[in-house]
Image (cartoon, rainbow, N blue to C red; front, top):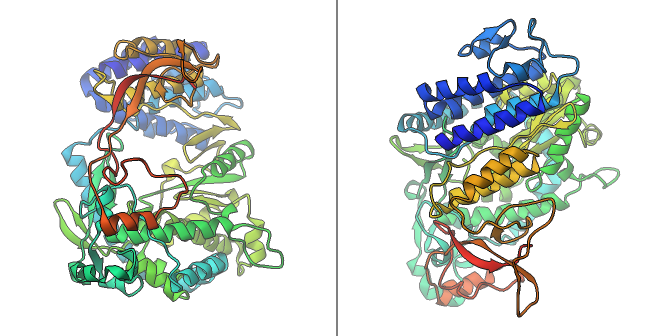
Length: 605
């Protein structure tokens, strides 16, 4: 924790210089409270201050009830007072007519910097997260009664939005044009890499849509292997494995690891849905408007650009949802796809219906899919987009038309659970989202002031006020490759953000661990310092006559898992890219469990 505290001091002194103030008293406060409260002060208490500050920017005034653990004077906390005085009026707590943007960046940087530090939560917090996972699923089941009277409107609007898309995918499912795909991640049945191509487990639900003879083997000539397939009935299917992964010190991220057979088919469906979504055009008098202008699963930039527009003009709101994927009801998805039986059957055949929750046993799932399913992200985005237009229709007080939908291009956009809508429809859209089970995170949703946040970018009045976040603890040696990589990345992010003094301090710390630490470009395989002045050259390659530097490169050894015969042939038939496989792809495959750093001579570009 000492290194984190030293880093905070450096950033505090540098940002104080930007804002022509002093951070000496703030540093004393952080030292004292860190000593008594421990690391949680940096990772939990300070981020709570930062969220309260963002709330004040949005509301236009400071609510001292959100700063109960801090001493206050007048209308503002004393902590970071030199910065706050440049943003709010000390006596009234009201936002200044022209607040200092540098001070806004400074407060956010100093309070939110450690808010997303990757580290395991305490056992108590993890157990709480597991209980909340079950409570959330129960809430989804209870909410289904609430929206039953509104489901016809939901179906009508979803058909208006996705009819052509669903029809195209439905047709491909019917004609067997879905090419399955194995993902790189973990599976509930613990198959990794090449082992997945020897999969001999299938379910009777999948068999109704995806016959195992067409999907588990390269051709029917391997019919002798068919008897080895274990066909699982619904009651004996492998449940998804619910597991926590590090997110923040406050709470872990809860994901659900899918069985291999389910993940295999989900990846194929995802690929088809994504392809159709990218090429899809809404039908009408003119086929010129792409649905991808409303919803996207592979590009965050448009959402970020709209967040910028919203902060500049105040006409667009950014909404964020809590537990987004865990609150999409399977029954709601069923109604959305009811008129496309082949698509619906395919999606629900590849949907896991049960989950193993640590400490709680096996439960039945009311949600469509948890994070970990390949179909989670696109399906939740479709549901949320439909909910948005249900809310807009409610505000218009008349049936929504296709022309109405087209009029919102460039003003409505969905990326997962990041939602952008016009400000005038905020309350009706929030009502619609909550009606159908979603939970709007009002602490991360903005529409009143000039602050906006979407897809990792934050803006105030048209100025980028995004910050640099620390993701890992300071590494103690080169053996902590993940930590070294993270802190070199942290150094380069601070450099690009203009923190020259902090960058110099980080260079001095990293140099104690990393012997070879050259200046390289962003595209170089070498872990080194980025610079606006270019890269350095330490020697020339005798064979290729190109510049070289000595530095550390990332080495990740794939797990050993060999395949041959039908598994190897199936892997070839499922190949997408025209690029050749790696030399040892039939011997090593899968996601590496660890990485290492090795010194090598490599190009600095």
